[in-house]
Image 1 (cartoon, rainbow, N blue to C red):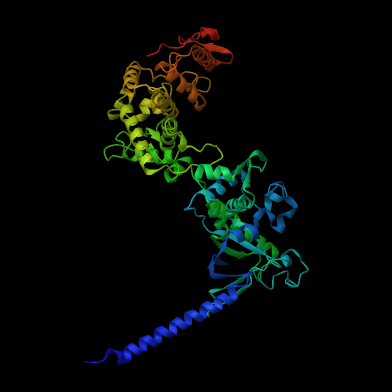
Image 2 (cartoon, one colour):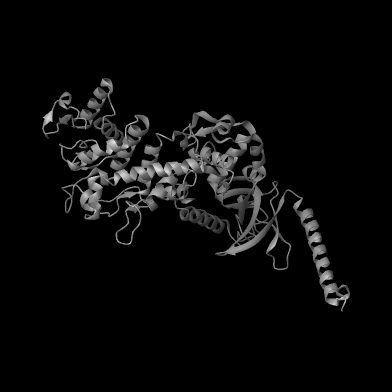
Length: 532
């Protein structure tokens, strides 16, 4: 039998393996030598659309300390407002750069996201490297034709194809500005400040300071954040892509146009998500999660081959001729206003804080509760009509093309008001859901939800604006109170008196109060309807 120990093939494989290990060790030593210098980072060179870029990663601490807002680029200094870190737009600066102003109200939520979410993640940022000579037309780096003799990026390749190497980021001659990722920079800078001081100033959009702060105690109480965990965050790394402010061979004007073009386009491509899209994607807000589950799984709403979709997943509104019943955004608000009466802790105690995902068991309970609500809603005569009639005919007002019922149950604002009232009645007042829906079924059969555009309707002037002849969202809370009242949820005489005044005020148009018979009356003559 042949001795495998003396097999030449094994000897060659072993020798190859040893050589590979030595090569890896040598490479590690070389990288350690080069990367040990704080002014250089390892990057990969890329090229797209004629622009060379260098992709790497940096710590959050480095990112916050070394990168500046794009509005601080020297070519914009004349119009730069250091108080807001924004460009003051006027006739001169409008042609220099086009950008959406920084929204400083976003800083606090971003800091909370990084501090409270263990699985947080920011996408890579795009930055531009500038050097002092760029803004000195007499600098040696400009030739007699006004073209740059070198680039503002100094790349040292480590491979024969010049694809992997080291980028010189020495603080002495390099300034870095964020082109894409300015709000991420704002968030990370806020995080560093929060870790250092234990508190974070809250701002309005224009960086006007509120009197309140977010404190470490707030995060410990709301999210059970551990101080030791916070101290580890500055060492986390974020992806970063560098481009040059000026490339070799460019004039300053050509470079300016190129950088501005990139800046504008990365901002234009980053279209903001609609409220509906946010509700689709949010995995932390319990109310959004519940709304999605019901939209997909409940028979009243789920997608079926035999009928048109009943949920608009993106828009927050429903057009008069739309065949959908509701929107995901409305379902999220219904969930919040109904389940929020039972699971109030799903909302942060402080409005400035962001929600945390509920425990799975409680989330399951919430989904079951909301499912029961829709089981009951499906028993209403108006919704039973859906099997035979389309939603447009039930939603449209009588004066619109082809006419309709003007039924508030087919308007998102009416659906949210009803959910809000039911949440208070069931979870706060302790009324029986079965008894409530017996009353609502009778109310619906008598046309109580229909004909919003007529003075005889309880919703005239509240959910329907007789002046503008359209639905008005501002009456949602009053509509919810009236629903609570007619379902027997308001017994206090003072509360009833206030409700009557609010109802009369809502039915007053241009100083003329409209009674339920359509005639002008004194405000005090407008009475509350009968309790069901």
